[in-house]
Length: 389
Image 1 (cartoon, rainbow, N blue to C red):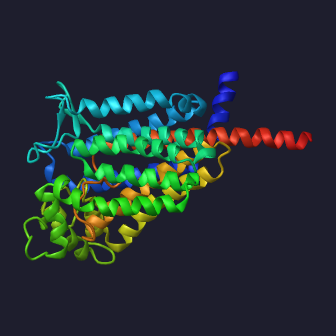
Image 2 (image 1 turned 90 degrees about the horizontal axis):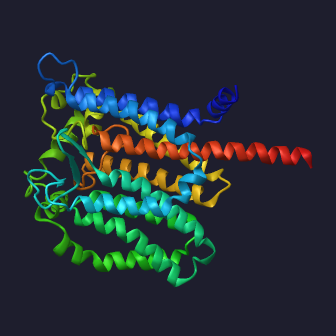
Image 3 (image 1 turned 90 degrees about the vertical axis):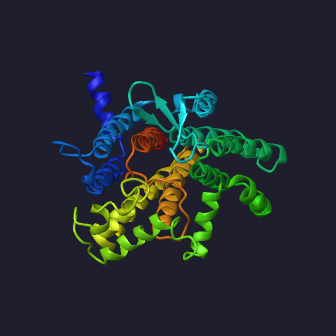
């Protein structure tokens, strides 16, 4: 009876608004991945391999989020040194010969861990994003009263540079940008003085020429130049050109689900993954795009709401970090599809095909649900004390 009562309490204390938003958004994402990969269905199968992987990832993700939400947030936050160490080890595994793999055309990129004998791949940087939100949130909360000290700020910068440096070495510049966005937003929310952000921005501007000449590959340089001189780089801009044309063809209401001429002809590379927004735009039109963005931004906004109500500083910052991760990835992914930004290789959360991204974002959602539940319990305790007084 006690266990049953505890379970019913947990169900009541779950943030069903966030959970339903995530489930609906994922269902929308699965539908669009199915539409984008109909041409890839083999034999007598009813769905493509990408769609099947996406369905399994969503089901597992929801189960993992529910399981993580049962864990006491104090237990999670106390493990932050272990979490940090595991994240570093996961990234270092990429550099073991034969383990880390990347696109066939980029031998210098090692962003996926090949799981022997399974034909499956895992992208550790997706999980490391969640680990980084936890470790940085704890670090900031520990030194919150000493954020004016240069020494503490340097330690925090080193903390941020570790994952950024590792993902850059692996060739994943897109994930490096996500880590930087998380770092900046959490530092700002923790109360770091604005002058340090100005100094940081100046340092980035000073380092830009070096990054361009020594860090960017020729392909990455051409993607930037293609935005300025599209006629000179038609080949490199092929993906974005066709993606933007697909969105334009969608108009207000779209050409109809499973009926997009560009999508169903396979003219937009990675239309089920990084360019999934072009599939939405072509087949469901501007209305579909708006619904997609509203769902994603509602999730981010809900997480911010939960963060603003937290009693514990570290969990408040972690909520803001999670919201930033989702919002920033949406901003960059849509910017790429609209040809405002160069191709960077950032997925659209809950929509892009791939198990790693979906599973890991649901781990983050599970953390938020755990924080929400703990906060609800705290509110009840405080209410009782108030009534007693």
